[in-house]
Length: 254
Image (tube, rainbow, N blue to C red):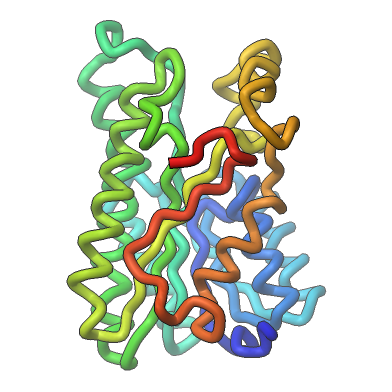
């Protein structure tokens, strides 16, 4: 069913761990050429690239600070130059950085949260879209969050606001780029057990979240992979555009 991905060029930002790494590995299994983006964890990124190659795909590791618009734009262009095209862009890079109540947040923290979560999507899309237009089409999948709809937990307001903006930008880009044969959608994960939550959530907070999930468990990075493959597949989702797909075990049913 997923033979269409063989030879396709996929760039996954934030691919050294968590959801990004799982998605990159999945595309490798399907024979894609995968751009593995990272910022500060080179050994982990190289390990993901090695798994992609071992599975039958190709991999190209590229470094950039996702919060640096110019650096991330150059990373997108580097992947396209290396493989000769760019078919699928997955904007996965993001971070809450820390749980900080709004009244305690510095202007620097505010800017950092917006840059890594929202400016990164803006920069990557702005770099990728001209490439995709020139080649006749493409596919962009952004990563938002359940927090975009719920407002997030304690100290997560800025992160939630940034992810809500990503959702809105996704809908707008879908309208702008449909005429250029570029579909734009987003995946909205719920509470997923990745290094993201290891840094900003306590075991008590994670257990409290688990009790609110109808499926009775926290999600894994692998639980998210199928939704990315579905949205990336023209065979399965060619009429799906501008959508935010929730992957949260039933915790939120909008």
